[in-house]
Length: 316
Image (cartoon, rainbow, N blue to C red; front, side, top):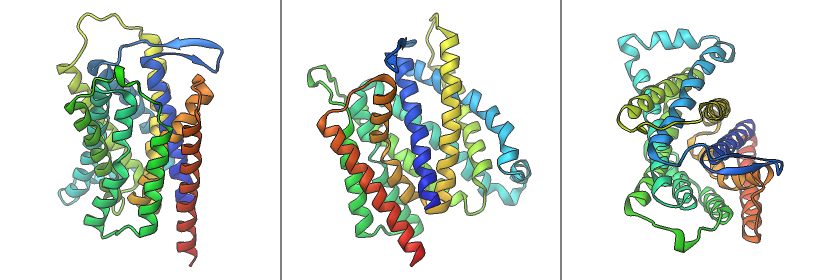
């Protein structure tokens, strides 16, 4: 039950991150009081810039807190230099590459097709996580888990904002990258689960962030806005907030994966669209229609059933 609650809290932080990105890309009314946002256009170079700014803050932030969260962090990282520890190091680096890949692919998808469609495609990832876990760990999903996963995905789809078909310019590349981002995130969760057998979540998460920082920095060398004058102060404020919730979200999610496994964690994480809708309604006054309310209720009840199943199975 503790692992279930940890992953659910991680989902909340990820949803808050979605709202921050939305505000940075589009002007919004926060708490119904003041207007802000729309600081940069939602282009691929600006997406890489925001990702880099997020990581350049979260890497030192976690470096400062890592020792308190897990006292042996730097000792464990130092041991990864040994030749016999190479597989552990490679898995941590692979986690960072997959973290960067799923974020980059999702940004590309959102730049080519409507955001609602891109997010819907991304949140197909629990299906891939279940299949990967089944293939590599022998963790065959029960009929009950498949049913819960289907309900969570259906409820999440209902909560997504409706997209005007006349404004949609869906492309094949956008659809492919949207699904591919979900596949990459599913791979990240199973790589994390495998890594946690021999490496604590704190050093794994820090190494993943560091790898993503390097890759996002390199990407800016190839994709960047030429001669653009940007509002750096609000961007850095948004970057700092994003770094804090990214740090908290990934760390809690990795702890949760260690406790309940990648498949269950991914099914709980599939509640993110519903939680994002609720958070957006509270912070930027996005309203909920009847279908969205039904979706939120469906996701909430489904995730509660999953948590109860975990508790009963451990108790029985």
